[in-house]
Length: 172
Length: 201
Image (tube, rainbow over all chains, first blue to last red; front, side):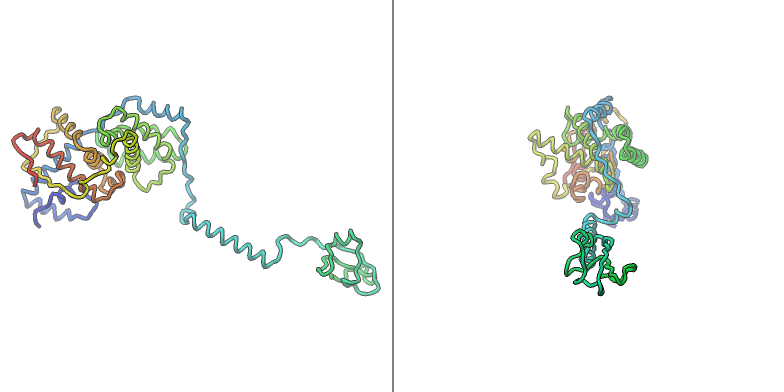
């Protein structure tokens, strides 16, 4: 191994993230007095820099700070911890899922025709000689409304004729 | 002040952060105790000796208090805190009308300058007088050099962590550390070894 460059020595000393063959360098140090001396000098320099301890703040620093935070009524912004399942999803996916659900719901509404459950069929008593049909059915105005009957629309009520007054005989 | 024991300090700070984010705002005082001198020193590294350094440190901690709840722990707390400190200092520099670029780097980021510490630097750190000389030599470095030396030598952050804290590429961290070591060698050698000269290759 050739003698080490200053960059390599410093990377070795500071434990650079990039891949360096530390074992090979150490073998070289044991054989090369020049590189060993360079490394010793660098270690001395690093120790000198590391010997400069941080300048301390005044003794009441923390107390003053906490008082200031209280006076300002500062409130920390606390992030909601997402549930483990939701951590797997990005917010955009949530919007996509919501849009998909809305589309499915809209499709279902379209296919079934209406949302609300059908109201209970109104019943009306009809007297006739013949069978009950749309054309010969008779309702008083209030009964017609109650039965939600309208010409051309299916009647939701039951119509009884005199021939079957006691039993349900047909749904128009 | 002794070197921070990173493992012990990390366990302690993680516990304090968890308590704080859980709603115990008093835990913040413990976090301040752990970091107050270090943040203060980093501010001095960037701004130089500054009578407002302590006020700026308070401002940094107020910002940390406000946003710690949203700290995602993707980076180490120290890296995040130093990054926030750097931003506060840069804002201060802008407000004062100084050239913020004086900290953001300059021509030296392009590469290395030759370093030669030979033949030998004998630094007896236990000597009180020498300690003062070393402190003065470090204080006499540029903000860029002081900052990387503080983060690498005292805080013992990795190149990657320093890059994150200073928002610079890892390659720039390498060249800054290299040049800072060279500058420190130049400052110390005439004092400690008057008979030798620094040989710039």
